[in-house]
Length: 244
Image (spheres, rainbow, N blue to C red):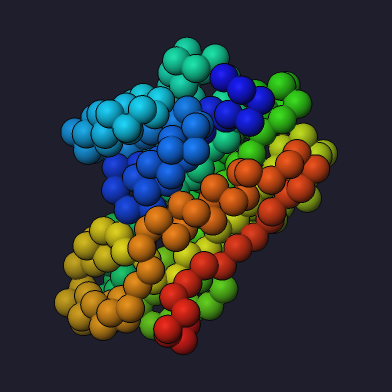
């Protein structure tokens, strides 16, 4: 492994931005360790990366449990010997008006979108501090910068990710870099979790213009490629042909 090659952990790696990021970073020569609930998808992705000459491994992961996250990180260390980067990408977006009182869906967003990020940070931060280097990349959304109808809880979770990322950056002592990526409308399966019919219809219209997941992967790759003294803290990446 060369000095520029990193061991990169990616959550929510079975589709969308996570899968695209795995492909891009493996193609760049990094060693990727992938986590998600759908192990069949992960296995297919790892086989594809290896078939293209990359280095990849996976473990089934539920980011909502700290024990699962700790085991995921431990397995990555067992596999590659260290962890240089974690991309906290796992997220869900079951939009609905607050008046519909879909409390279970609210809690699911809180568990995955906020606790999942915190569990990722908690699992890698001591190791990164001990080795004197590391990079934590958190995926937020343009919803971390604005609130729209049906998205109050989702936006709240992404506002939280933005706040957590900024707090982590301010607490860092120069050894751990922190990057927040806020995608606009991106091709993914995220909207498939919407059970409210009106919210789903509105989102289908909203997503009529979307950028490919590879655009977000490119942004992540850019942040990772910077020299150690450069910390890319925040990027918003969205379609040029729409107003968001």
